[in-house]
Amino acid sequence: MKVIGKQNPSFDLGSLGINATQNVYVNLTGGELVQHSLDKKMGELADSGALVIKTGEFTGRSPKDKFCVQDETTINEVNWGNFNIPISPEAFNKLYTKVANYLSGTELYVRDAYACADPNFRVNIKAITEYPWSNQFANNMFLRPTSEEINSFVHEWTILCAPGFRANPSVDGTRQHNFSIINFTKKVILIGGSGYTGEIKKGIFTVLNFELPVYKGVFPMHCSSNVGDKGDTAIFFGLSGTGKTTLSADPNRQLIGDDEHGWSDNGVFNFEGGCYAKCIDLSEAKEPDIYKAIKPGAILENIVFQPGTNIPNYEDSTITENTRVSYPIEHITNIRVPSTGGHPTNIFFLTCDANGVLPPISKLSPGQAMYHFISGYTAKVAGTEAGITEPTRTFSACFGAPFLPLHPARYASMLGSRMKEHKVNVWLINTGWTAGPYGEGHRISLSFTRAMINAALNGMLDDVAYEKHEVFGLMMPTSCAGVPAGILNPINTWADKEAYTQKANSLARAFNENFTNFADQANEEILNAAPRETSMA
Image (tube, rainbow, N blue to C red; front, top):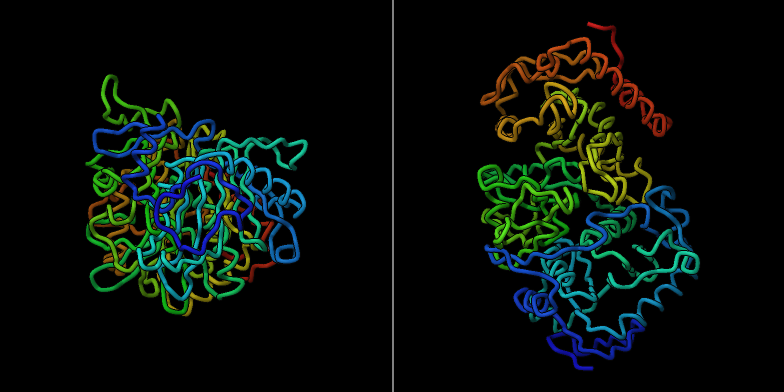
């Protein structure tokens, strides 16, 4: 065994139960890791110089195979259920030993990194991966310590990532051969059987969603964030596929981050050091910042080349709709350094409404803001999770239920108190369908969405007239610069007005049924924000 690279001299893999017999590569540069992937025939180079890899069987997260160790630390804190599936400490320990033994016989890639741009909340991470491109992903997505910091680096959390290891469900207590397990007591994330890199970043996100509110009083958010020339911070909540990365990458505003943030008493800070953007139908014209970020150091996942070339075909979804690119945040030209901002002035809830019912922009009252945050309505976009092949209606509490270990009411309470204290404007943005539902209508133009968000950010919607949505009670502007007035009230885009009202009533029923899970924790102001069915037009 030979250790190659720079690490804290006092660190020893044996302390983690790994007795390495093959080479161990520590804190290699992005370029070195790319070369290792090429040498191992694990990837190819695109014409841009980005590494192109295939993640194998899994091209999206597998939430049904995500577990949390149930012990004294978690049993009374974690909101156990579909997204927080318990596993015993004994099962974890046995599986950990198996994974450590497996990794002992492979070449390993070790990465020192950290999360949280605010040094008051920094969490040091050691990622130990079987594949070089998994390690490069960790380098792209987490914050990168300086060479001097590595000399004395002491990690708090450990990630073991072994895509080639397959669990035996009947023996190991997993659902199938792949798994992602978080042990909050031992501070370990154990990933096996899946090469999908998103499991790495969402594992740490889940950790922060537990530790920051429980121990630090920080509100963690599944959102992107940017800041304007006047220092006004905006945050964009939304699940994957709703436009967080795209809409926050604004050439006129500095990017704080594209997916995960905390809101402390000091303001907003990024958890990450990189971006993880969807690539399906990507073009330089529509998303210039993301397109230009695809260069040496970036990793393209599961894309297909144009025949006979190494030019990506971003329209091709042969492998998955969930094609992705990860890159260090420095690949975006206009970024905030450090990745922090003040208290938000505007909050945007992004939803991809496949029903074509919700308006493209509406302003929310405080009660409506809390109602829609707790509801977290969107459509899961094809490919984001295993088995999703077309938009599927879903309610994901706080726009991130799969990553929230605590009860949604705890996060909602933190948002509510901050929102009122700082008098934040809250907007609901539909980035989904208009002129009919999925299969009949079409997705709202990205240029129109950008124009509406810019109008809200610049105060151009402060003095326009509004009208009230007949079912959802949302206040919709009747005019917006750069946007056809006819699309602002969605019923006007449907040829069959009765069909629209039927669809709106159907969605309202779904909202109300979902909210029965939270009604006992909601005050009268929130309950009064629920949609109400109406008679046919």
